[in-house]
Length: 551
Image (tube, rainbow, N blue to C red; front, side):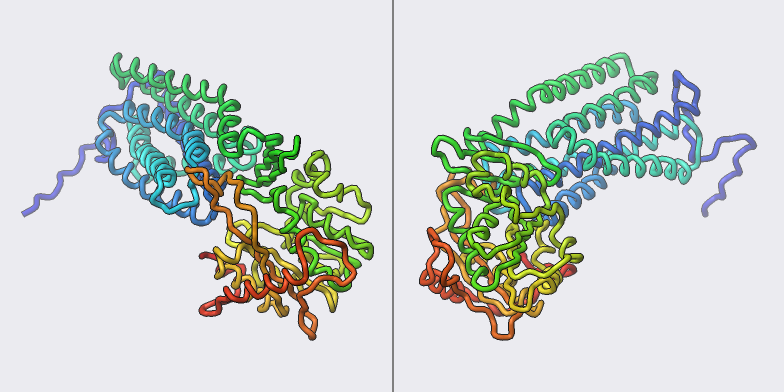
């Protein structure tokens, strides 16, 4: 038989209260405020670590949806394990919290540099999940998640030791400060840390803030809970971590330069972070071919860009071409080919990254490669997202050229959707042509034919073709394996489309400019080669709410 509990005597503390209040150097009310402020700062730092891992993984590996899902799911799982593990530290909450924050500052602050170093000096991020680089990403996500998860039980214990409060009220206060801190950290990362400091310095700065906040809270407010030895150990550990972070911050420029040379070679001429992406130019002087990288991916190679741009532009110019719209193509190379036709009166370029356009105007090698296209008065540039711009396009065009990154990259998925091609269809003149860069054919046939199926679903008739012989001797960034070999695709795929009732004819203008690489015979042969790869089973159009470009 269970005996009923005897009622608590008048004035006795409730059963959830802490029986040994902390010895604080300040009044309890102010002490509680300082703990909640610490919760706020730690939550902000924790979210910055999460976003930094997602951003860096997306940049280095690609496919931001997959990387975000992996990082966040692993971290949330680890936070639960960390919360359970922290139960053993509750009797020594102050010392435990100090140790957790020191470790978190070191691991989180150095995570970006460690990941970038592995990427730069080993490569092979694009391989199977069994490689060590991706394991390192998961390891950092797991470790940071464990440490973040351990914070909450320890902070709960510290708050309870300051003021006797029912658990529900303490949890409400704790999570209010935690969520507001996460909001500040989430906004600070894209709008402050990333544009002003970059990923590497931003992570180091966050680790410094984390170490200072955690160390000040424990050594300043709860020093009475620590033994003399524990105080010295924690102080020395924090100073060592701050020294390491400061040293890394001093050396970060040299590190980034060395890592960039490891990725791109020693011929880097321009490296800048625009509001949209990282832009790197190599070569272009002393007879060396120019290479343009956007977020680590090779977008233009001076060795074979003429093969790509001639195949992209000239089949679409076989017909009326008074007004031409180029979506993307901020490097000016597609515009160069368009301007070779004397009948062109207007070329509108819609480019998201104004930094790429500035570089294409001002860099001597790149502007020479694009034939100084931006000096032509017929060229007009609009800095905008192509999808949004098409929704309010002011006029119709004879030719629309979609010179955009490969389909399957998450950031580009909407630009290969049925809705996007519906908007492009709307701005086409009755006999106008749309040409789309649809990614490699040989290595990703299902993606290529999904683009074709999507364009046809938007009411356009299509003529798919490919251009083989893509230069693969140069390997850098994610196109480079650890052994230095290239994983770059061996071809480019294109789709010419039209709303004309007579269909679309794949050919070259009979009196067009002389081309260096493309002939009518080669174009016909390449179209047949593309058709031999046709995939029909299970293909459905890709839409905004149901993208279908996974291999």
